[in-house]
Amino acid sequence: CYVARFDADWLVGSDVFDPEDFGIGCNERDDIQEYIPDISIDPETKMLTVINSKSSTYMSYTISLTGRCLPARNEKYNFVPGRTIVADGQELECVTFLLLVRPMHIMDVCFVNELPCGDAGIEDDNDSIAGKSKGLFSDIKEWTPHPNMDVAQKQNLTQNDDVNIYEFPLDPCRGPFLCSQGFGGHFTHFFAGTHHAVDFECPVGTPVVAIGDGVVTNVRDVNVVTGIHGSNLFKWNSVTVKMHDGNYAEYVHIQRGSVCVEVGQAVSTGQLLCLSGSVGFSPRPHLHLQVTRDATDSAPTIPFRIKRSSEHVMKLVPTNPKLDSSTLELINIPQTKVRHYRHHHDIDLCCCDAGNSFISTNSNFDFSIHI
Image (cartoon, rainbow, N blue to C red; front, top):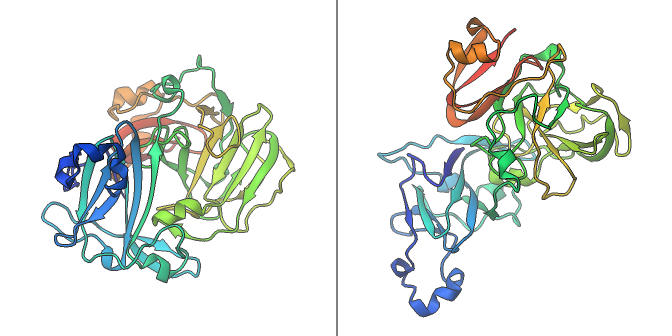
C-alpha cells in the first residue's frame, strides 16, 4: 500500500487544479463536477490521475490496481505489488493507493502497464479472481476531520486526562505484540471513524478478550477475504461490545467462525470473545481495536488508555520523539529492552507488550518492548 496525504515523494506530481487546463470555461464552472472525472487514465501516456474539483471539500481515494493495470516501472519509483486473497483462496498481486486530496487539487499518481479492462467497482464481483482482475477498483468519499480536534490532535495523554481505562485485548501469555499503528496513524487512522484506533500485530488464532464488562451488540464473522485490495474495506469481521460505561468497543479483522459469544450475551473483563485474524483490508494479521460513544457507522472514535499488568496506566508520549535514552527514561523503559524493526511505512506507531508499555511515535521504525 502507498499512502499520500496531500503529497508524497513517490507521486509523479501534484498541483492546483485549473479548470482551463481541461477546457472548462467560466460559464461551465458552476457544474464543474459534471465535466471532470474523479479518476482518469491518459490513453496515450497511461498516467493515472485523481482530481478533486470540489471547491471546499477534501476527498479520499482508495484505488487498487491489479492484473494488466499494475503500475509500470519508472525512473522515479518501482511500486512493489502486495497480495490479496479472494473468497476461494486464490491469491492475486495488487497495488493499493490511499490518497487524501485537498480541494481544487490534482494528483498524478503513477503510470500503468495497460488500460483497465472494464470497471471493477464495488458493484462487481470483487470476491473472485475475475472480478478483481479487471484492473482498477476505486472507492471515493468525502473526508472530514474528527469532530473533536482538540482531543484528536493531543499528543500526550496523561493521568489527568478524562479518558476511560481498559484492560489489554489479547491474551498476555501470547505476547509481546507489536502495535503497528496508533492514534492518528498515517496509514489508515486519519479518518474520524478510526482516528483513535490501535492495531496490534498478532498471529492468526490469538485469543481476543473483552477489555471491559458489557453486552455483545453485534457479531460479523462470515467473511474470509484478506489482503490489500480496496474492496476488502467492506468485508471485515468483528465483535462489538457495549461496555458498562456506555462506550462501544469494536474488535476487527477476527477469524471467520471463531466468535464464541452471541448478540445479547453479557461478557466480563478478560472473557474470551473470539480469535484474531486477518479478514478484510489487512496487510498483515492483526487486531484493530477502537472505542466509540455509540454504535452508528458514522460514530467518531474516542481516546482511551490501557492498563499495565501492574494496574498502572500506560503512558502515551508525544509523537515524533527520538528513540534515545531520554525518551526511554521518560516512560521508564531500559534502552536495552527495545528491539527495532525496519518498516517501509512512515506512519504513527505505538507499541505494547501485552499491557506493560505504550509508546506513540512518527518514525520509520517499528519496535517492540520486552520487560
